Length: 231
Ligand SMILES: *Cc1c(COP(=O)(O)O)cnc(C)c1O
Image (cartoon, rainbow, N blue to C red; front, side):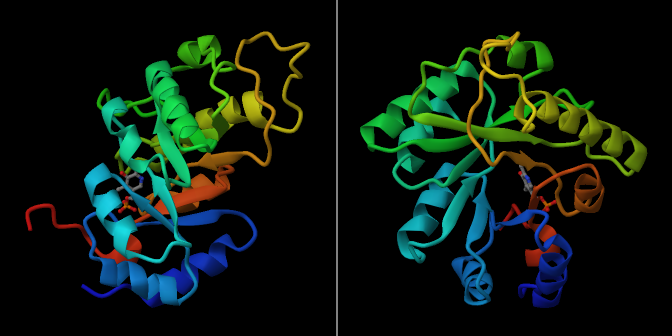
């Protein structure tokens, strides 16, 4: 299935100046990625470590690879040399491993903390209490750039919107320009990097996410067509 270039241009125009588009290319062939690349697109998102490593090896080096899936600690080492942003950091252990692998590669890896906002139990992420207790100052080779979340997989846009609102409000508490300064912070999670990223919104709900303050959307099927996992 060909890439929907019309849709791509429409979305880019819609996001202009407000949000970054991560084109989610998981399960899709490198030819599809190159089609968007030739239109000037550089941010691509993948969910599976092996697939990402294989694609990175043969595609242009100026692509910014976003890892958006659930990352297992033992696989961090494969993507640490090149990954641009890891969206789904959901445990202190994983942070520690990313720090270790980043240090080995002499780099600082940008990360987003994943927050559990959906009603479904199956989605990964920190809850607010866990976020509050997170101690991450010791991980110098990790830069926490913001938050990521996935809303419930639902047609109920009121539910989806309320989940995005919740994520936005947590984001504002920790990452807005008016965030608590380290001196007055009531929490061990002190953050001093900018600009901050709020990654929320996918093909089915990105418009709602933008209305609720998203500045990074992750869109796959609208651009590349439905995915077929049984190929
Ligand atoms: C697959 C995936 C997307 C893209 O989903 P679409 O509905 O195809 O746009 C976005 N974010 C994450 C975390 C994903 O796993």
